[in-house]
Amino acid sequence: MDSGADISLISKSVGDLLGLKIENNDKITEAKGIGERSVPIIIKKIKMKIGDKLLETRIAWALIEEVPLLLGREDVFNLFDICFKKNKKTVFMD
Image (tube, rainbow, N blue to C red; front, side, top):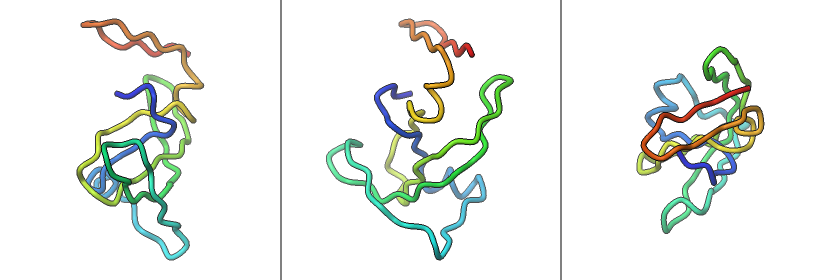
């Protein structure tokens, strides 16, 4: 997990598994700050469940595989109090 990410990021294959499709009206943009090069992405809205909380959130769907899965601050972290403890479980509280 990356607590510095603005938006959640998934790889091409994860998006495929979720049933995401590239639509005619999708705008392909690029994200920077992930490794040394920019990554082509499409912003999608999905439903995400964390614990008992169901969220409608925006994610960046990378059109390549070589990206880490990132849980972003926008639409996710702003809804929880999150505590990171070294060598312990990450705890989400709403």
